[in-house]
Amino acid sequence: MSDKPGLLLVGELPEWDVAALEQDFHLFHYWRAADKAAMLADARDSTVAIVTKGEIGADAALMDALPLTKIIACYGVGVDAIDLDAARARGIPVTNTPDVLTEEVADFAILLMLGAARRVRHGDAWVRSGDWARLGPMPLNTRVSGKRLGIVGLGRIGSAIARRAEGFGMPISYSARARKEGVAHDWYPTPAAMAPHVDVFCIAAAGGAGTRGLVDRAAIEALNPGVIFVNVSRGTVVDEAALLDALRGGRIGAAGLDVFLNEPNIDPEFLTFPNVLLQPHAASGSFETRKDMGRLMRDNVGAAMAGRPLPTRIA
Ligand code: 8YV
Image 1 (cartoon, rainbow, N blue to C red):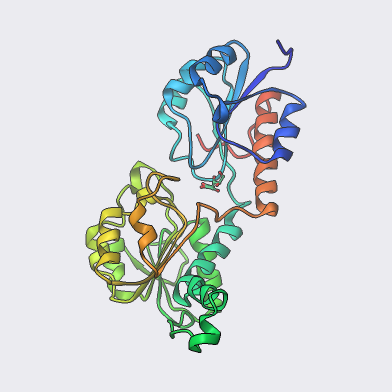
Image 2: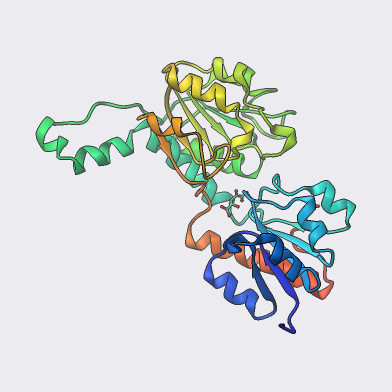
């Protein structure tokens, strides 16, 4: 038995974070445990920290299985998959990794807009398949610059997307519960109210109970035909059945999707649409950003162990 305190890794982390954590902790790699219950029983009397990821979270049962837990540190900004009420009830602080991924995710939203509208997948396949030489130029696609952009959720990431879109000459509107002080963009109280006024519709709202199904069937049915549809937030924010109906019906011109319900086992129908650019929840996935996220996550864990204030406590 190790004399180091235990730390449960709920999901897989890059080797540099694993190596750094191993200096101070005995790691329980929960994500690769064949017998998860046995691992929790092993970890119970020594584990003082749970490290999880945005898309995986932590539930009350996990917290109860590790009663010495002093922190749940999320490697990611979104804590919607963590049962925050359960953590609060047990006096366990929760931290996340805000700011360090904002610009990266905003870059990715622009990439999805451009990649979907300009049919980047199609162009790549056109070259590789020999269609270029055989058939000539690929079919035409859709411009992004100057088009009207609507952003669902103008938080840190939504605002960073808006800053970039200004460089593309895009008139910007946003939907949010309340108008944001000092923001000149057009405001709509709901995605459905905004939908008819935009050509590019981009979801950047935080996930969680408060935004579940926020982009509802009414919003999807109110989209302009040919709209470019992008989601870099959470699959839960969208009525996915309505989105699939709109894709099937040809109402959406192109979509760039990084997030889905039931990741990574997404609805296979998404694979059937040639005008959808699919990504595996990868918006924050550059070396640089993941290193920054890991550092911030570890700073939070270190602070919890030392009894110092937590740098980015969210609950
Ligand atoms: C993931 C994310 O956490 O920050 C978030 O909320 O969803 C992502 O950055 C990332 O994939 C790490 O697992």
